[in-house]
Length: 361
Image 1 (cartoon, rainbow, N blue to C red):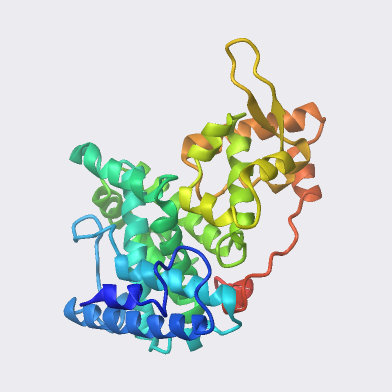
Image 2: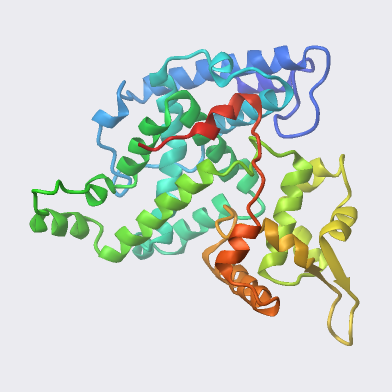
């Protein structure tokens, strides 16, 4: 499979992650690359003997092989983002494939999400540090734009292409929560033996609780349009810096180190980091041995999202504690703050507009 030929030809693009595409064939070139990438993925799915209906198959992430390295999926995701930002085409016109193909495209990024959730739930603790390091790399600030973010975009595309109900069923199945989340009929009692069997499979009920939390985080993030499907690189960088400052006051180097280098480079074509920091923060001069630090402007707390997808658990907790301190200083209740700071509706790119009516019935 000669991937390099498609990605290095001068009339296409040197890298799907950087800069504007050459004109005048930019959209045509991206469209051709999407078609070629879908063809390669179709061949790979055939080689993997993937079933036509994934819900009819049992794939237990606890025992089945899973890879966090999905180069073709992520090239496809990056190309879809490029096309969505530069045209008004729908996703179905970009990916002219069957629903079965679209389900298969979603399946592997979803497995990555489930594996990372299991690692965070402590289900792989006996396997040592290696798997934890994989999860850190997958979601870490240096690589997430080339791994987690692209997988997340494919899941959002899946919600549009295969339907939200089908995606939700697939998510609960792969998270191993279908039976645990099932609500019994009013005239039925829970099967206690079956419950114990489900809990026992996950070793501890605590694992199930954390996995259910991770599933809810995932669903929330798919509904959240503050992502690549809606925002420019400048807005993505602004969002990232604001949430870093919600966690704590930080130096310039701490802020730039906590943001993807590629995002910094891409956003620099629209605005400098210095100008953006001036817009969102107040700089406190060095004092003695203390370095100069940036503090979030109070008015920017209205943009805080406690479920920001790049937060680690500890960062989320620190940010929420800082918010509580801020609300206490202005004598405001949390419920009142939520009511007064309702975010305006963010419209995604035309290809992802169906996400606005994402029903979970």
